[in-house]
Amino acid sequence: VFLVHKLAVLTAPVPRSRAMQRLLATDDHWALARHIAELGASIVLLGARCLSGELPSAYLAPVLVTVAVPALQLLVPCITAVSLEEVSQFLACLACAPVRCVVEMLFLARRAWRHRRRLSNLLDGSAHLILALLAG
Image 1 (cartoon, rainbow, N blue to C red):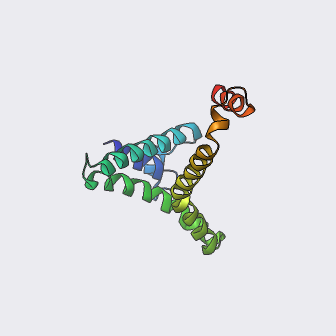
Image 2 (image 1 turned 135 degrees about the horizontal axis):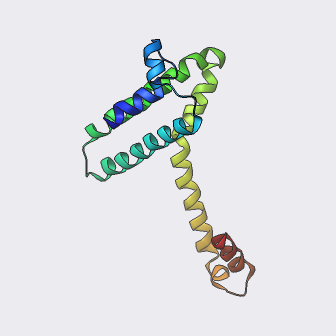
């Protein structure tokens, strides 16, 4: 029921019939943002459970389909306005983002290990900088 409601609300701004538009469409951008955030949270939670082995991937498939339908409705008109190369570069950037995050974390860990004496010195400026970053 949750996924059917989210799919209906997110596809209603671009409906095929006026009855569906009157019933489900909304001009409230905050409401649409909330629906998108709830759908994103369900993807993250179900994806984590599927990756850890607690749930089979069959539970994640309907959520991904629910996300794909409104995304395709938004992308199809944009593809004519934007070149296919730019769309593919954007999708490749999204696909590579988790790998880039891991590489950056490993780089930071290596630098922290290399300068561990300086990081552990409480009288050095780096400790003050770390405390300021953690407090903010």
